[in-house]
Every structure is written in structure tokens, then in C-alpha cells.
Length: 241
Image 1 (tube, rainbow, N blue to C red):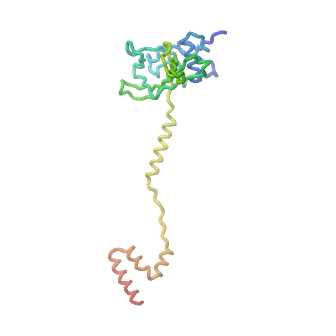
Image 2 (cartoon, rainbow, N blue to C red):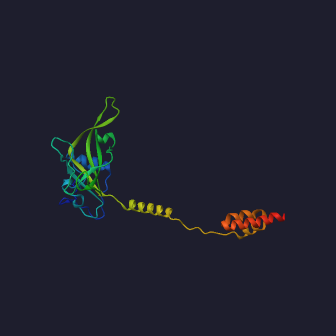
Image 3 (cartoon, rainbow, N blue to C red):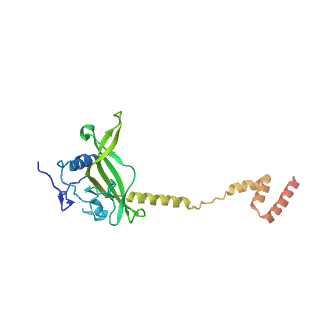
């Protein structure tokens, strides 16, 4: 079977109409695992590059590509340390959230699992960098160990000197639209809308015809000078009775 090669000059080139959208399981067990154990890859579509030698916007590939995939060699940040160097010329990649386990059925894993680490690119020097919209999913291959009860599995040593990186930009349109909608709602709730006022002429007419309620109307609706005059009128009314 002829090996398919879609990488030219370090850039993946797919034929028109084709789209590379692998799942996490496919990236780990069909690409990263084959790369580490020197098995034949399903297709040579993922170029080899040291991701931290480039800023994310300078990585090879077409600008229109939504996701970019790279095999990147592990580069230790310090001597005698397993911590990877994730610093670029303009910033650094910072891990966020917890790692996700990527596994398949036991018949295919053979005691091997994948780990997906999520990272965000910050522009500037650590720890005062500015967060950007660039995201990286870094896939690693690890061996699985078992407890004495042989029931639970935990991670053991990492395997190989390669990681697989998926780099993309976070979609902000939905977030920004949601923020603007929320702001409009808050603004609308703070605006006082003038309510129309109605005067019930029939109610006033009925109250005016009732002498027992004339005093309350005059005392509540008149000024201090009018109150005194209304009291005089009310006293005259009660005198007649």
C-alpha cells in the first residue's frame, strides 16, 4: 500500500474537498502512537515542528485553516526536569483546567492512554502576560498502572519524545453577542418608562355628590390655606343637618 503524503515544505496540503477533522482518540491512537512507536501512519498529514519556536500566528499553514496540527518534540525547560518549555519569542503557553484522559477499548490500548492538556497563549512575559484567543490542545502518550486491587488505573510514565498539538483560535462572536445582549437587558431594566396617567372624572363626581366624603377629598387634595376653607364649608354642611 502506497503511503499517502500530504505534507509539503512543512505544511499539510489536502486535496480540494477534503477536511481533516480527527477525534481525540484518533489523534492519540492512530497518529501519536504510530509516530512514537515508528509505525506506519494512516497518512503523512501532520508536519513535524517545534511549536514553541513560533508564535501561534506565525505557525506554518494557511490562514483560512480553522485547526492546525503538529508533531512537536519535547523540550525540557530546565535540565534534569520533565517540565516542558512553552515559551515563545512574544509570549508563553499557560495550562488551564484539568487534563483529560483519552482512552479506547482495552483490546486496542494495550495499557496505553492519552492525556489532553489545554493551554492558552499569553502575550508578554510571565506572569503578567495578556490572555489571547489562541488555544492549544496538547496530546501525550502515557502508560497505565494498576493498584494492588487491580481495579483502578492511574497514570505512570510518559512515553516517547513527541507530543501532538492542535492549535486553533477561540470563537468569540457568541461570547461578545451574549455580553452585548446582557448589557442591553441591564440598560433596559434601568430605564424608567413614563406611564400614562388617567383621571377618573366619574369617581370625583360621585364623591362630590356624597357630603360624607367631601371633607376627605378637600383635606387630601388642597394646600394648607385651602384646608382651612374646606373645614369651614364642612362645618356649615354639618350645621344644616
